[in-house]
Length: 249
Image 1 (cartoon, helix red, strand yellow):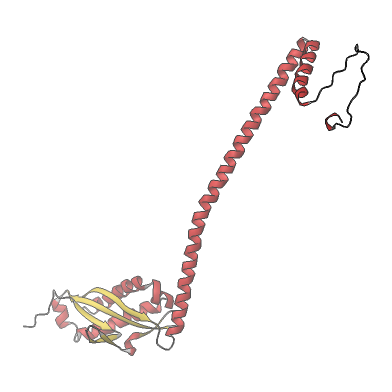
Image 2 (cartoon, rainbow, N blue to C red; image 1 turned 180 degrees about the horizontal axis):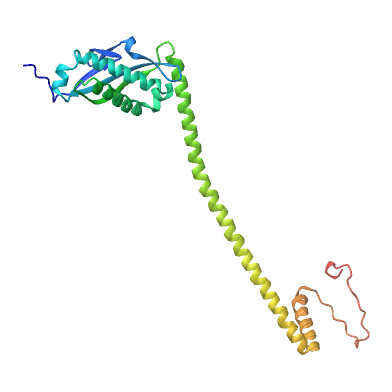
């Protein structure tokens, strides 16, 4: 009786094969499996593995003649379709996780269509790179894109630092302007109130108010002025004024 290993998770390599497990490990590329065309008409050299297990022993034993060959061809077809829907940038850099997930789903659909009795555990990309003839050019492009992303992130970081700072300075300036406006308003209101009070007093006693305002004004300005007092009653004195003194000009 042929009893398939239902509980065992098995592995298949596509695009390459392990020559020696190592360490160090030695691998050999299988170009007819590894070379794939991207959606933007570029070629990538892609190695990946499929991990699977048997989910239905009857289907596994009787519906497919060569299960491993079927899995390999189906996996290669699913990966080619997935890579063909994406650009080379996604394949080489940011799209790896999505490529693995989409390929696994496509592969499972194909194997279920065949009623193979196989369950796809996972698809894992091992290596994705440009073919040797153009690898250096692709690496320069990838490096330039990484630099671009770094510059953008640095600029955004600086922007995020400077904007709150500028916003804080603007709010500070606005608060200072508002405080100054309030102070000037209060001062102006005080001047107006004093004027109205004096006007009220003036209307009650015009001459008294005039005299008081005159005396208050003299009190404010006389301390800053040099004063000369001339007596009209004194005689026999020579009146001399030093007109060269700048303070008397």
